[in-house]
Amino acid sequence: MDEANYVQSIVESIVHRMRDQKVKGDVADYIPELAHINPNQFGLSICLANGCQLSFGDSDVPFSIQSISKVFTLAIALGRFGDAIWQRVGREPSSHVYNSGQELEEKNGHPPNPFVNAGAIVTTDALLVSGTPKETLAEILHFARLAVSDNEIYINSAVAKSEIATGHQNWALAHMLRAKGNLCNDCELVLGTYFHHCAIEMTCEQLALFGRCLARIDTKAIHLSETHTQNLLALMMTCGHYQGSGEFAFQVGIPAKSGVGGGILACVPGRASIAVWSPGLNQHGNSLLGTAALRELSRALNWSAFSSSRPK
Ligand code: GLU
Image (cartoon, rainbow, N blue to C red):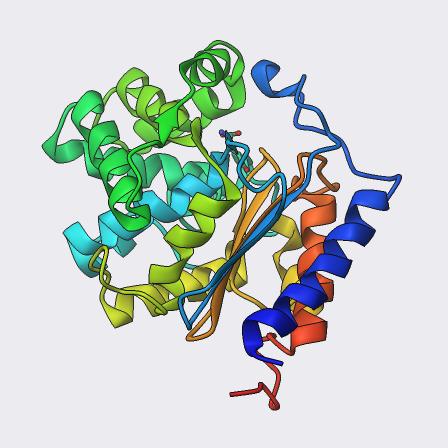
């Protein structure tokens, strides 16, 4: 059996089992526009190194990528500023919740990593140094569209507006960053841009195509250096699931980034990129069934980064 057929048969049964699960987690209702998403949806798409793409379930339904957009903004910031970005944000996992202000207070406005909200707000601020919010959002969208070779990627402005109106914790973080001297632009400009890039909608099929550049199975569409790609994957492994990052590495062992929209982008270097979406979340804000599916898939296919017997 060739690899695509083998993967297809394994993943088909995983998706089947996931769709039958009764407990699906809770949708992120703190963002009003996301509160009425149907939790029964489940999509998964995989791109393999041989060029095959396999898709299952609701893999063609656009969903709010939320924090997965932090991978895009960090990739752009690394390309533009290189290591200088690390003067403004750290590279360590955090034991606090993703929108915590406690650490900012303790570390004098230096966020622990670019994937917690404060770190992503700083990265967004860095990108705004050379452009307006509109230009910066256009650049982020262009980056995603180029990587996927698909212009049908948009921002859901109703989602962004609902976060602008209700995301008080993020406002608090932005003001604290500004007070501590780690935000160059006005909070309104930075958070307006941040909330809008979180509100990008993509399908699992599009997200898996994007992941090919991080897994380095197709590096033609956008330029990301080998070093920056390794940097991004290291951070996805150590910080990609907030306080659940250690458990995700333990259970799944694949560098991955989650978002509260219920999506997860996982990249197996040199082998595959996987996007999974199920809107119900676990206690850390990561997709419950998406995580379960990736755990089963990683074990069945031996795709953990820590496996010594990965098939070639
Ligand atoms: N826009 C969301 C927030 O700032 C992103 C959180 C996430 O996806 O983890 O709260």
